[in-house]
Length: 156
Image (tube, helix red, strand yellow):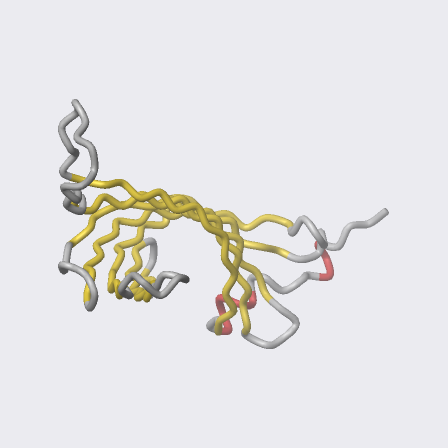
């Protein structure tokens, strides 16, 4: 959900090990988002098309449920997005590159592991680098800005 430069996001995930020996982990989270930069520019594939380049900052809060000790994690993300229209009316396509860092309480170390000379850290950092794509509905006035304009066509 976006309102001007501010947005809110909700997400959920379920992770399970491939070997079946570990328990599954379900995480529910939310993020507050700020659009730092936005610009309309010609598409790299077709100069007649227009895409929106955006840079977003996210503040993230997650909580582990079902299969964990219900820890709360905090973090942030930086997202680069490209958004443009498709051949369908009012349908937008979006590509994203995301760099996300989340800090969560460290899991207790088993006593069978050899001790180190360094004290254990109370937090663990998780770095996720991801790419993604999404299709969605655009309001007619918003989607109209991505339509090719005859007067803007390149003339040889």
